[in-house]
Amino acid sequence: MPEAIKRRGDYEARVTHNRQLGKLCYRLGLEFSGDAARLFATFQPGQFVQLEVTSLALPPADKIPAHLQDQAWRHVMLRRPFSLCSVSATPTTTTIDIIYYLFGPATLRMITLEPGHRLRVLGPLGNSFAMPENKQTALLVAGGVGAPPIQHLATELAARDAVSQIVLFAGSKTIDDLAIERQDTPQGVSLPDLEAPNIAVHIATDDGSAGHHGFVTDCLVEWLQEHGEGPTADLVLYGCGPEPMLRVLAAIASRNKIDCQVSLERYMGCGMELCQSCVVEIRTPQQTETIYKLCCLAGPVFDAREVVFEEAH
Ligand SMILES: Cc1cc2nc3c(=O)[nH]c(=O)nc-3n(C[C@H](O)[C@H](O)[C@H](O)COP(=O)(O)OP(=O)(O)OC[C@H]3O[C@@H](n4cnc5c(N)ncnc54)[C@H](O)[C@@H]3O)c2cc1C
Ligand code: FES
Image (cartoon, rainbow, N blue to C red):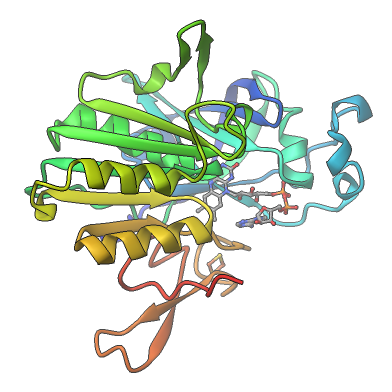
């Protein structure tokens, strides 16, 4: 993986938008100027920021979903980590977009952000997905809130013409939970941010509300079976999502001898290698013992062969 970018800082951003995409899903735009604009314009897919949301107030009670009513009142003491789904720069400003899902007290407070509000942002943090070398097809698999960095990667691969073909598999519990901007048309669901001649998108939902009814990794297996004729050395696999999904992805990659990078989530107290809360168990080349690396420093992107995933229960 590429070295973590060492230049990082604690900057102020201006909120440009905070739109609801689905019942529990929002898209937040943050604009930087000056030095921060130049730094955030270099942001690579897979890197992340830590948002200072500890002082935000709770939204009104009628805006708090029933299943979050109890935990809404918990104190938010730490910054929260988020990947980006897009970065756009003008000569003087850079705007980053975050798609966030309402999980608990911090993300709930984020829905109160309005255009013009100011927010402290620590970043850019972590390493990034390594760009493919001598590959024809990039297979991207996103599950749940793993979608934003995968969207960022897909658009970057397309913009750089890094491969001839990008196939993106996006999975969520229901279509309303998809953490990608979508349009529902009589013909079906379209994802405007991913419309490019060399990007093909396959959707999977656990409840069958759109696309394949079942796991997103099933779609990948089907694709590999249908395209089984070609050499797998031409393929590269990228994934971000829940750990059980990444574990399956790593097994598929290993079985088919495909290079695979996965972006992992951990609780991140600081995001800058101080609190040691974000360890990932890593295989050493000898495979006889394992070591621990910090997800916020050595990751969040790892070679899937290195990661010791938790056994499924
Ligand atoms: C590198 C990275 C990138 C991420 N990118 C996104 C993103 O693009 N969109 C998005 O919606 N979410 C993303 N997350 C997860 C996001 O940080 C959590 O959803 C958020 O912190 C939840 O805070 P909360 O107080 O609302 O919920 P909490 O009640 O604190 O947590 C609810 C659940 O969120 C997860 N979580 C909570 N705190 C953390 C933490 N500090 N670090 C990691 N996971 C945590 C846990 O699974 C927990 O069970 C990312 C996490 C990491 C580590
Ligand atoms: S988040 Fe604190 S050390 Fe990684």
